[in-house]
Length: 154
Image 1 (spheres, rainbow, N blue to C red):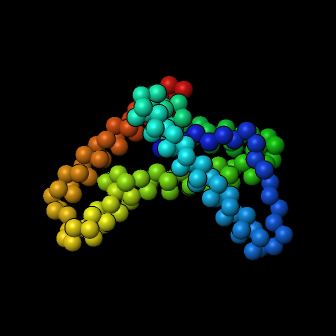
Image 2 (cartoon, helix red, strand yellow):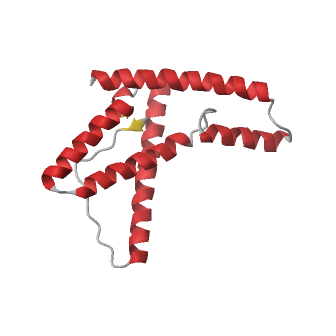
């Protein structure tokens, strides 16, 4: 699942040295990640407040392929690889943000189980954990199917 990025323009950044390149790349990564997190929080807030489903700003694999194709096509016509690299970076940052959500089927959810075990001082019952994971996986699959249907409809 990816929140739709805005690729109207890409800025080329020239680094003076390798350490400068690391600093600038880190800042760009931080900017993309925080923008993704803000978009996700806005999307979730709108959904919970009944202001829409947010389906227009969420893409699944089908939408990602279309967006990637558009980025590569525009980059090839202008011979600009920066847009392709930026798109790949956005996908990577997006996956990091979504994977860190506290949903049991994702890494963030597993972290919640570990934190819960630390707080209560004993392991969460394995059967209970499996039930929670199964329910979360079902909900994620339903969301993915809904996203795929939205991608095909666009």
